[in-house]
Length: 267
Image 1 (cartoon, rainbow, N blue to C red):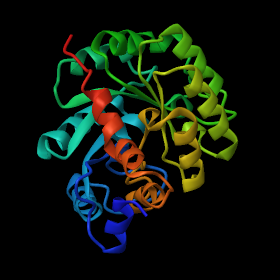
Image 2 (cartoon, one colour; image 1 turned 90 degrees about the horizontal axis):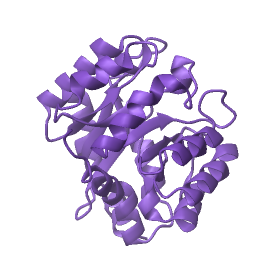
Image 3 (cartoon, rainbow, N blue to C red; image 1 turned 180 degrees about the vertical axis):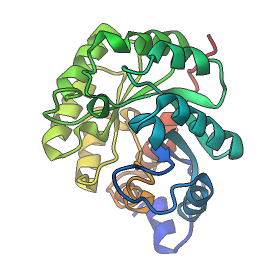
Image 4 (cartoon, rainbow, N blue to C red; image 1 turned 90 degrees about the vertical axis):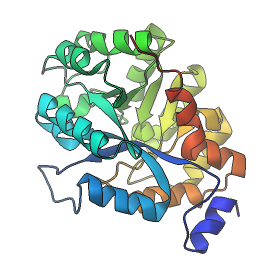
């Protein structure tokens, strides 16, 4: 049992390890009810779980209105600057160049979020060119949705982008989303050191997390929960109760994403 697991059994937040949620959202979602998705309620849950920071994109930005949604993300970070950092959400159909230029120099944002499945546009398409150009220049990570078998963001597409842009850090959101995709995600990450496996999924479990760390190392795996779309406590529990060493757990929970964000530069 590692020290983070011991803390959970004792019903206290883990100490000595900074926990950063690399894949979170904020605000309501139009297709179903999400309880308490506002920033204040999210911080309350983060406090209970010992999560220091969440990297967020507003559901509104991902789903319906990128411009208004990025404003909502910026407002949440401004309200809780010590608890949130934002992703600039880019919708390939809603002027991606303008959105990147608008927020590129805003310190509230630390990377870019794209969702090819939601926007019905392939990860490899030319409308994302500005994303890769900005990410390369700013050394900013790109969190992309991935899903095994998708016509828009399957794992081979992630490998294709990594071949084209080998110095861009790509956070493979959900790592394929299901057991059928996890092995594909591991294979892509094993070939591309700048592809990082982000682990949130309603179908994931600790054994696959341990397998990911065994295969590519904890420096290519980051904790994300999809909170509040999914329950932060469930996602965090998968990491806390996985059979990881203290050092690997610390890297997955916060060390790896901290290192990646430290590379970002102003452009």
